[in-house]
Image (cartoon, rainbow, N blue to C red; front, side, top):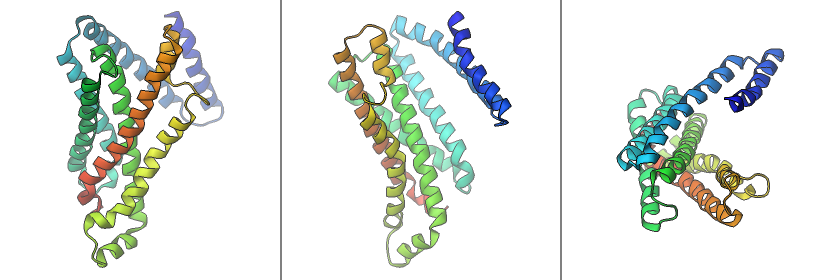
Length: 245
C-alpha cells in the first residue's frame, strides 16, 4: 500500500500542474489513474488463479476479452467518421485483431519461443493486442482523413478505370506507413535510448542480461511484424467500406 501512495505522488503533481496552468485535464488524469488501479487489481486477482491452476481455457477467454475490448475501443473512436458502417467496421477490426492473435499464438506454439503457459501467454499477448490496436486505430484515422481530404484524387483513379482496391491502395500505403513509423522508431532506438518494459522487468527479477536481451529482441520483432500485418489485413478487409466514406 505504501508503494501505491508514493506512486500516486506523480498523479498529484500532474493534477496540480493541470489546475495551475489551466490545462483542464485534472478530471481525466484522476479518472485514468483510478481506472488503471481498479483494472490492474482485478487483473491481478484473475491472473493469480489462472497462473496457479494453469487454466488454458480461461487464458483463451481472457485473450478473447482483450480482442473484443480493443475492437470496441477502436470502433468507438472512428465510428463518427465512417457514415453508418460502424457495425461492419467493428467486424473488420475484430477479424483483424483476432487473426493477428491466432497467428502469433500459432508461431509460439510451434516454435516454443517462450513456454506456452498462461504466465507467459497472457502478458505477452496483451502487448501484441495492444500494439495491434494502436496500429489499427492510427491506420484507420489516417486513411479516413486522407480519403476525405483527397476525394478528387480517389475519383480520378476510379474515372481512369482503376478498381476500388487499386484506387484505395495509395491511401492505404500512406495510412499503414504512418501507423507503423512509431513502431519502427521504437525498434531502432531500443537499447540505446530506452530499455523496454519486458527487459526491465526481467532484469529487476534477476534474469541474465543476455537472455533478457534475446527475449526483448524477439518481442520487438513481433510487435513490428504484427503492426504491419494488422494494418494490411484491416485495409484488405475494409476497403469497400472505406471507399464509401
